[in-house]
Structures are given as C-alpha cells and as structure tokens.
Length: 269
Image (tube, rainbow, N blue to C red):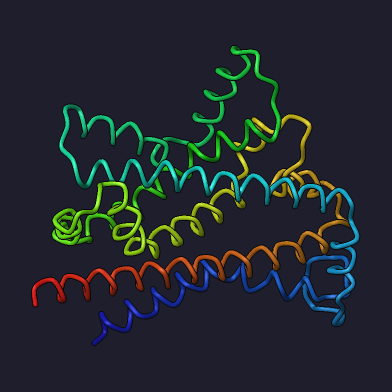
C-alpha cells in the first residue's frame, strides 16, 4: 500500500512537471499585465488581437502552413510506397533500406539540418521555403511510415487476392480495396506529419534563409519583453491546434485498427 501511494505521488508530480508550462500558457495569454509573473492583473484578449494584427506573424504563419501541408502530403505519399513495399514484399536489402529511411527519427535534428545545409549549399541551391519542405519531408517520413506500416500490416491479404480472382488489376485492387481500408491510417499520417512540421524549429532555422516560419519568428521575438504576452497568446493557439490534430490522428488510428479487426473477422467468417 505504501509503495502504491509513492507511485501515485510520483505520477502526479511527474504530470504536473510535464503539463504545468502548458497550463500556464493560457493563464498569461489572457493576463492584462506585460510581466510574466504572479499575481495576475486582469483578464484581456488584447494580446490575441495584437497577434492577428501582426503582418510579419501572418507571413510566418502562411509560410509554416504551406510547409506543413506540403511536407505532410509528400511524406505520406512516399510513406505509402515504403510501407506498402515493406509489409507486402521481400527483396534483398529490405532491412537496411528501411533502416536508412527511418534513421532521421533517431538522429539529432541539428546533425540532419547541418548535413542538409552543406549539401544544398554545395549544390548551389538557394535557401527558401522549398528547401525547408525538403527537410521537413525527410523528418516526417519515418513517422508517416511507422503509422502506415501498422495500417498495411493489419490488412488481410486475402482481400486483395479475392479482388484479383474477381478480375481486378493490381492497380484497381489497390485503389478500390486497399486504399479505402487504410484511409484512416493515411489521415492519421497526414495529421501527425502536419503537426511535426508545424512545430519543427531546427530544420527551418538552418534552411529557411530569409523567409520566416512560425517557430523561427517566435524565437526571434523572445528577445523583446513587450512581445512575450503576444507570444504566450500564440503559444496557446498552437497548443490547442496541436491537441486537436493529435486527437484527430489518434481517432483515425484507432478507427483504422478497429476497421482492420472487423475486416479480419469478416474474412474468417
């Protein structure tokens, strides 16, 4: 009993340490004072109005959304091919190839960013939003493949074989049978990749050039104390958006797993 109480206390303290900064964000975002400290002075929404009225912030937000949408679509499309190949076919060097593809997930991001910067500058490519999209696609692909591999591996192979027996080609069977069944995994991959790209800082810092992105803009404004309340308001919006996107991704992942399970049960019956 005593050990259980200590474990519960540790869990509560750990969760408080982990989520206290997130809880404090909206408190200071709606605080009328410009100093981030207690006691709070009063309730206000002026910082949110100041945030939406900032032209540089709107440009950074547009750039980040463009990068996140592009990177999530590219990473998911490439992830579909990789996940399909790794779960359905055996070929020489498959383990090594998949290991290299998944390597950015475990490498320090600053190493990846510096390597990409050296390669791009050596090739004479100008740093821009496009180079950030390339970097974010590279970083998002392992996560997309991890999600999509689960979706493809849970798919009953007999469904595709039955489609072939009924006269469907490999492409039509993939389009009409496989894709609808793994669509929850695809949506989950898109949402997770979008969230990772939107929040990513190091790759954007190295590869964006003169184009601001949301994380680099936030970092640049931390030097100005008067801008901190607006950054708190922006952080509140980003946290809310990240929670919504991750919740949607988890919903589609669970829906996909349930759908795969029901399909397997139907096949057995």
